Structures are given as C-alpha cells and as structure tokens.
Amino acid sequence: MRKVAVIELLAALLILVSCAKVPLTGRRQLNFIPDNMLTQMSLTSYQEFLSANPPLPKNNSQAALVNQVGVKISQAVEEYLRQNNLSSKVGKFSWEFNLVEDPTVNAWCMPGGKVVFYTGILPYTKDEAGLAVVMGHEIAHAVANHGGERMSQQLAVLLGGVSLDVAIQKEPALTRDIFNAVYGVGSQLGTLAYSRTHEYEADKLGMIFMAKAGYDPARALSFWSDMAAIPGQAPPEFLNTHPSNSNRIKAIRDFIPEANKYLKNQ
Ligand SMILES: [Zn+2]
Image (cartoon, rainbow, N blue to C red; front, side, top):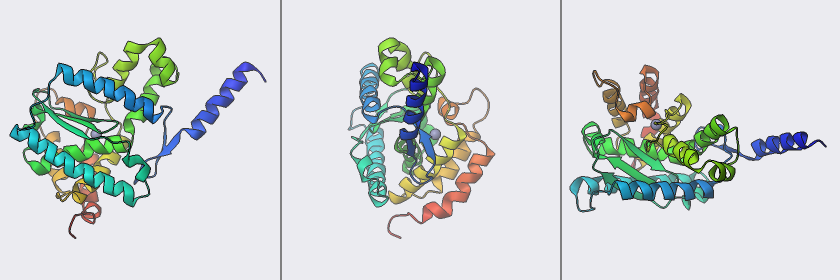
C-alpha cells in the first residue's frame, strides 16, 4: 500500500474512533485530542493565569459566593453524570472556583474543572442565581468537551490537522495560544466565539445543572436577555465568546419547562 494511502486510512480510522457523544443531545463530536493531554495543558495554562492574576482570598465575600455556587453546581453535575451512565467522566474533574479582580466581563471553565470568574461579570450576574447561570453554562461547555472539539478544529485549520503532541513539539507558542483562545482566557489570537450548536448545548445542560443545584432555571432567561440588551459600545468579552440572538433567547425560554423537571426537592 502506498504511504499516502496508509496515512489516509489511519486518518479515517482516527476519525471513527475519535467520535464522542455529547451528554443530553447525543450529538456526535469530532475530537482528536486525548483527555489527559488536554487536562495537562489546562493545568499549565491555569497555573500561568493564576500567577499573573492572583485570585481574591477565600474570605472575600464575593469570592466565597462564587465558590459556594461552584460547589453546588459541581455536585449537581456529578449527580447528573452518575444518573446518566457517565460516571467515568466524574473523575476527570478536580474542581476549583476562583474570583479574580479584573474589569473584563468574563468567566471560563477549563477541562478538569478549573473555573475562573472575573469581577467584571458580577454587575451582570447580580445575585447568586445569576452566578449559577454563568457557572452552569461554563461548566456545561467543559462537560460537553466543546473545548476539545474546538481545539481539534483549530489545529486542523491552523496547523493542518496535526495531532496535539506534534503541535506542541513543533509550534509550542501557537498551540498554547490556540488553547487560550479556545477557552476564552485571552491570547494573541484574541478569543474565539462558541458556535451556535455549542451555545444551545451549554444553555440546556447549564439550566439542568442549576435546577439540580436548587436554582430557578428561568434565571437563565433574564440573565441572557439582559446581556443581549446591553446598550452601546462594544459588546462585553463574554458576549463575544458566547454570542446571543433572539433565536437563542427563545430556545432558552422554550427549555424552561424541561429544566424545571430537574428542580431539586420536586
Ligand atoms: Zn457559551
């Protein structure tokens, strides 16, 4: 067999074995990146970020609230995974919840469950349930491995579809930049917007997680409606990476009855 044909065959096989299913929606997603590599990379990026942006102390009241909401949502996530035959995913998360002093309107969750909120988003989340909306949504992106999927797509576009270990070897700085852009951390490449498909999935999963944690999922509707209605100027960072429109708001509204079924104590 010609060498090229062998490579093509291997690539086809890789695609077959690298298709994973997204929880809830069952959508098949392409993912070339082994979980352990992604987690390793996220830990490096996370430590670098925290060194440059020391989080507020745990006794800071706002940081404590972010942590409290994070603990509740993460417990709901683990319960959801166990109840849906996805217990193997639970061990992939080693949760940490931080608040950093930064006016940027942003929040993210890396693979492995490392969460950072920026103080700039607090005027928009307003209350504990508002924090739960963003917490649930960001963690949902991580649970659905949207980052790994986006990383695979970006490596294909920018580096011709090489595997992550080859990319790290050949283009370490660019690979790290792609990672940070994909996860909304900010990089030379700026940040990348999640696709409509990813947003819809993260909205639904996020609303289920917040309901299971005891928060009213309808708060997602008011949060995203408020975000979309921010007047003038450039849209905040968070809206760039999580683009919204009337169809998305409608989908959130339509999903409230379903999410309500997961409400704790009902
Ligand atoms: Zn999103």
